[in-house]
Image (cartoon, rainbow, N blue to C red):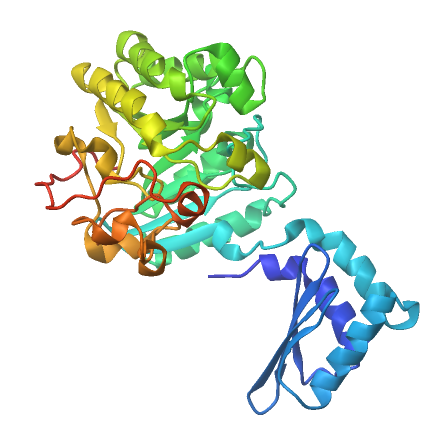
Amino acid sequence: MTPWVHTLFSPLEEAARVALGVGPEVDVRARPREDAVDIELSIPGGEVLRGRLGTALRLEGEGPAADAVRRLHRAWKAREPRRSEALLEAHAAVRAYEGLDDAFYRRVFTGPQGTIGSLRLGFGCNQDCGLCWQSRRWPDPPDGMLETWMDELGEAGVAQLTISGGEPTVRRALPALLARAKALGMRTMVQTNAVRLARDIEPVRGVDRLFVSLHAADPQVSDAITRAPGTHERTLRGIRRALDAGLRVGISTVMDRLNRDELAPLARLLATTLSEVESVTWSRPQPYFDAALWEERVLPWDELREPLVEAVRIVRDAGIVPDVTSGSCGVPACLLSELPEHIHLPPAEALGMADAAFDEAERAGTACAKCALRRRCQGPGGAYLRRYGDRGLSPFEAAPELSDFPLSL
């Protein structure tokens, strides 16, 4: 699909080209790091040279181009104006976009339900959740690029599309993009906090499903998580307005230290006042953009198991579908060992399609390596294992009988 992120780095690449003194026959790729620049040179004849300009030089390759990179590195370290000033200025302008690439904005997967896609409209949001993995400084793509990507997703045969952000309802382009997706034959789900829907449901009119973030029943706990005082009540009103408009709604709850004791109260709130929601998804927290905050808030599974199981039972008894293990951020299946009928896992061949796929290298030497569901369960993720090891994990000696997840987009 049409690339966009690389255009953000064009000034950095041009500054690197000038500083290196290489001609147009050499393709220069440059990407920012916090205090460094990654450079890749594609040289006629097929040679590729990679280096990182930082406090120390990492370089793969030899020859005249490598010598040029070494000279530039010396200038970079010395902050020598003649050779590195333009590169330093270009680096400062784009360093906030470190690690960013086009896959953050749109992706296509082939899974058990066919070809599915995701389109992120940007990173702007009317909340500031600490549990979010995104930088608030990453740029939003222009509307024209979103339209181009939408058409390309249609050309790729995408049948089911998830539209997310940031917060997608803050983008004026959302209604037109939903209409475009429908015209291309896609079914759509919008991931939202529903804050704007409290006053106007029109931005999502025509969507097939909403997936609403709601992390607590207590407004004060919610405000501590979202860092957006007053939005808890607006999210609840947005959900009610969506349900009254006949929209399908699922709830998304990310679990960490702040809302552990809110899992059951939130389940009761949904069961009693918003019982028309069709599902509740509980997710493990991916590493937050603020890594130190994740270290502080992520809980071991043995501290989450009891309140999670209680919450699952509450929503199940209210006729709401519990979703705990099926998604890319699903919790380890062993947490539901006493409720195996609610363990829903993707086929083994689909596991690698998820961003959070737990690979064999991460399983090695862990309780997960001995589990009968290791080929299908997402597991706790490598970050959890580095923080807590095997704590709270109980591998299955024999695989329980699993059923398909009862809902689809």
